[in-house]
Image (cartoon, rainbow, N blue to C red):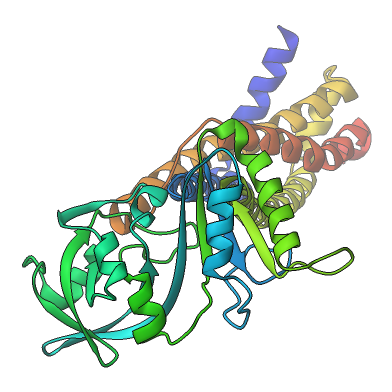
Length: 401
């Protein structure tokens, strides 16, 4: 009961000077609000990225031209990956459901007076099954198109909109560089890739047409591999690596001239990048809380000087040093905890406003509130100790004079 009474006196003392109390809270409010917004945006971004990663396919691998350990982009200067490699992977590796060799380049595309830039992929009919990505209007690339070097294409929805607006493009003609192609289908909408590029800004053409009539090359850029079940992904990955070593005559310590990427690698990269950015932003919010704690400590120290007579009088009528210490720590913790509540509420409001105004992805969860409570308790205790000790050390006679 005695402690509750002392705590009440400390809270009452804060209420007598509301302006000073607000300034003590300000740093905590700003820091907690920033922390709440940062974590909500970070979790929202991570959720969106992981959703994009799922589009890669958990049972899929990409055998990409160019060595190195980091995630590609492909190295277009490497010409060692060939159609023969794709045939060997498909015929010699077990537990593979589909493979799709691909060559691609970014090129200008015209339709009438409309012009844009898009990525042109030269593919075989197996591309659609390998990516689980099918046409929503018209027909896909077929074996006959590849065999006859047909000048036909399937386009993504962004490219369709850029060139034809809301009209159906099926049957229309586009020009890729100097070659004319008839549109035979439109792909389903896929959205953005894990690295933020637009999956739907693309055109698919027959592989033979692309390599001989458009790209003028014999090598391919990558091979998409779809494994029969998830349990075999790692074993297939090792088999493909060993097969490429044999075919490309690579022996340790020679560096690979290819990379094999899985959904796990893409996900790990996305989570790592998101986690690093969030950690930096949380550290900045923490710095704001530390600055707020310094301001709190200094204002409390000034308050101790202004309230010497009050402290001396309380000591004279029987308050112990422990009572004074407890009162000032209560004031410090009340300021930071109240700042936490206000800051969390402000952070939620800012987060929801950002979501409505900009459509950025956000996820509100319990973690920022738990972290905010921890920060508030730590800041209130750490920066409140010195003023509380100074107040408790005052002697009654000196404080009253």
